[in-house]
Image 1 (spheres, one colour):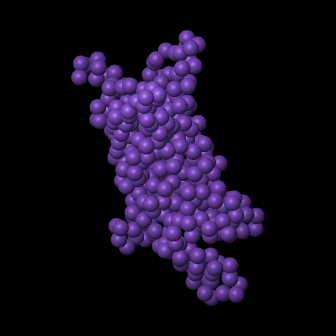
Image 2 (spheres, helix red, strand yellow):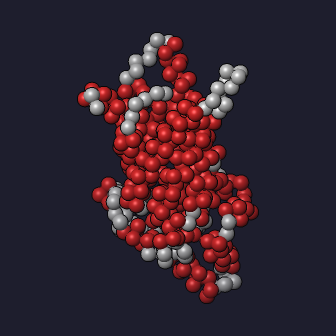
Image 3 (cartoon, one colour):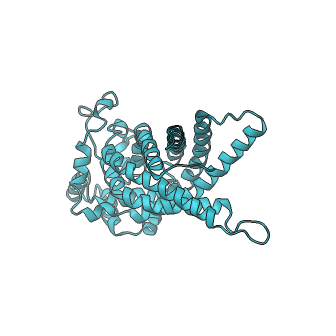
Length: 344
């Protein structure tokens, strides 16, 4: 799809889209993180029934400040790199004697999105690590509730609490490999599917004579295509996301809750043998590789553990990707049209 946008257009549109989506779908991401945490059963379920307790739904915007700050430049960097790389590959892509291109369009889109993701992940990793640790900070019902979430949306208390767990800034980049390992296959799957679906929908609407070319239509078609592609890619990559979550949570070291549990376990070793083993595994997480963590999750929780939060992730990714790329497309086209009107 040809367009005539400057890098500033792409940066502004990407930042606007990221900020909008963060505010809307962040609560679902918080719940997903807690579901995938190794402490999920102990912190967020009733011991007697194994059903979720109220703590699972408290402080759903904890840690959002750090993400908003990092998401704006990381999203801008992703889209700038993606569009630039895609344009370069399309231009440099040689035509074979058979008349076909050397690199098919899905390969070009996958390479461009993967390149953009590598750049984006480097910027986003510290905020992602801090965010996920902040999402696990427990607050009492007297300080946080669903009713007063709006007034506390940028409450930095949980973020500051999480930040104190890190002894050096280098710890904030722990998890870059796991974040990239999740996002690279995700984007490599999502963007070729997204571009394919969008082209098919545009072709179908054009053949039916109902295509208007309006800004709203472009945004809705983009949102539908991106949401569908994103949900499929999200479910498929859930096991990688589970491992990434555990690596990032372990980067902050032992939590206050874990310290209390360990002290109790030391006093009642025989009665709490299971907790001792769990805490030993948690303490080893920071030195474990991704494969070792995946094997441990599989051993202790089965395949179900590797896909924990997959349905929720698919749901919020469908919503988030649809809004994200839909808002980006609308913003990009709006800025392009406005500059054309002014003769810029």
